[in-house]
Length: 348
Image (cartoon, rainbow, N blue to C red; front, side, top):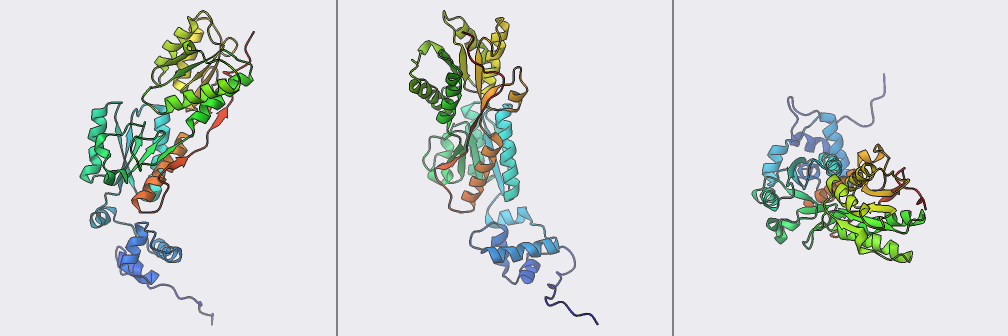
């Protein structure tokens, strides 16, 4: 006769769809404890969570998110406000945010503001109606609707900080990134280095310029105002402002651009002028979007890990919504310089 198992199997749930009461009975806890554990409450210890998760797996229990949301007054949805959904960098941020949201049990809604403050205000009202539990704000613009203290607790900024106390931001060190890009050009031997920045309202723009200026200063190179241009984070800005730089009596031998799209526009203008990159002018971008590696020539750039930025921001938002203590100052994500074929020593 075979020896019986030392640990008896848990009692099977009643026939039909397993209920939360079945999970509680199998795990040996109360229904309230199961509810808290499935909601991600920090009040449930790890051992109890493990028993509940095992019971969920054994029974095939599926959380009724709609019913739970009504009971807890939660929508289990988060909103991501994006200034330009067509921007490949923003699209990568969204991928990372959705990945973290799904892992935390949230659905994601997306709103494209197209840089219009009125549209941003309209999207912001989603948080007032209870349609969503929290928001990620990309691009640094903070709608007035969201500036009340109670709503700020349900926000996280991504890529750039917002002008509201208590709202953490997930970003890279833009100043250090601008400094690394410019140092690379200096180390190649360039001394007449231009800069084409993005949108002036974006906080990343002055920070990247500060890094550019700091690198010039530490190398003893004079900052020449005529070599600094601004526009938007677009190919059009790169093309137009590069044409202005080429028209100078002494054009730059290298240009640090505030985004990869600006860099691509600059390269297009350089080629149209009958010049070559990097033989005549070196170009450095910023962001490391997908197209940077396959452009002609492949673009030297500062890698701003967009997908990780989105993932970390959504994870931070989920922690804040669950009441888990999280950094109010946000998260700094590392950047790195990626050297490709668009930079080389100056010809002369």
